[in-house]
Image (cartoon, rainbow, N blue to C red):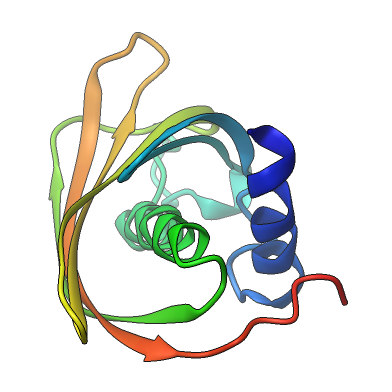
Length: 144
């Protein structure tokens, strides 16, 4: 399965604004559910002494993971335009690698609702994102 989804991750890394930053690695996929590992680097932290990751970076990672799930499941025939992102921060997130999980809640002809979660290294939930995405019909050129 990793080879199937790797081309979507590479496409996102090459063309996505934030796709270059998070260095996603495949963990697992089941229908309507994707797990990736993402990395937060030092330049993504708040200036405080604790060095916790800035909330916008966390939301961005979750937006990316949920989008990759939608793109992969459509085989590159839809591209999501995210709307009304709602992030809940459960605990602080430090730099390093974190497991991210995307779950498709519902998908209609034009709109999808997706949930994303980030877990800390101890396996505890650190942040949750729920959002809608407008589905744009497209044909991605994944082999370029």
